[in-house]
Amino acid sequence: MFYQSRSRRPLIDHAKGVYMWDVDGKRYIDASSGAMVSNIGHSDPRVIAAMNEQLEKASFAYRLHFENDAAETLAYRLSERAPGDLERVFFVSGGSEAIESCIKLARQYALAIGQAQRSKIISRFPSYHGSTLGALAITGYTPMHAPFAPMMVDQPKIPAPTCYLDHDDLTYHERGLKYANMLEAEILKQGPETVLGFIMEPVGGAATGALVAPDSYYRRIREICDQYGILLIYDEVMTGAGRTGKYFAAEHWGITPDILAVSKGLAAGYAPLGAMIAPDRIVGPVLDHGGFIHGYTYAGNPIACAAGNAVLDVIEEDNLLDNAAQSGAALKTELGKLANDFSMIGDVRGLGLLLAVELVKNRETMEPFDAKHMAAARLVDIAYDKGLIIYWRRTRGGYRGDHVMVCPPMTITPDQFNDIMDPLRAALGELQDELTLAGAFA
Image (cartoon, rainbow, N blue to C red):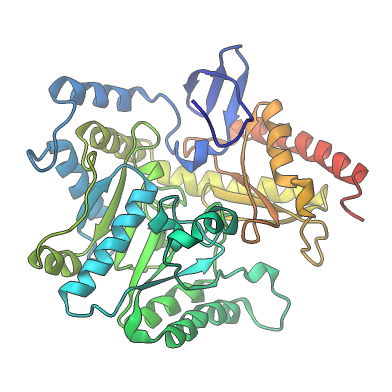
């Protein structure tokens, strides 16, 4: 194989619960759930048994030849849990495919109802929506977007609601409205008749580091989309399947988007699986207009959907939504305490077990470290050597800013917190010493 870079990691031997072991016997705690995927932990025997049972029945059934019970059952269960009228499910293999599906369904809906002039999807900057060209066109993360920009139709962006960086006299409620109203301004700039939809992560993922907007933001965004006849698309690839303490993050604010994408925790790493969920008021006209011009070979794969059903069973049987909410709040408190000892911690944020720590040169001004120091990446490497797996990204659009994601599986319990906090504290101490010697704080 070749990877994204020349750096290499040890060979995995086995994994169980929140822990993983390499072939040399070293134990790691998976405090990022891989890439925020392994929501129910590793190697749960109930999921393995369900997948084996499906394997013995049929390993593959192409959706144009057969329907399969695993996919139909999971679709029904997802429609029961989805907000509002989101009741029709289209399965895919991952997050990027789920986002592509949302974009294509939105466009085909506009064509079906005679609004062919609508083609623009407004998104936020920073944001991340996937690695395919369509998903990259609506992604606001410059290093990933820029190399391929000539190959895409770039889509309009508005600022993400980074209220924690603002220095003004507005209340938190007012800041939420300020950022939401930027959507209306962009719609008017583009021409409302040309705008197809607005896509957002209800809680930011890796591009913004678990960013949560003020409550006022969510309702106002919904109002603006309704006012201009624009589809509101929620990217719950990372937030869905329970990570924030609700099965879908939209539930925290009582919002029903027009289309929703989910993946990652849907099958929790046991199989590649994602889904688009939409209402019949959108799906129906598309099917009546000649059908949905889209699809993937593994859409509705019975093995993947069997895994998805078993993962949902585990979430329900083990009450993992409540644990994500309670353990997430407790872990966030523990992470917040680190700021007392490390002035380079500028912010601790998130919801449930989708948490992030932002590193800054100056906490008062929130000035980021010079990009050359690669502070977050270095913290990840130091922590890894200590048996702690966390995840890093740039906070300010891809080229500047540093944050690490701390997102353990939803099975984490407070008695396991020390396995995260002790190596993290030690890693922060080493990083602070390195940055001081390098003159990063000057």
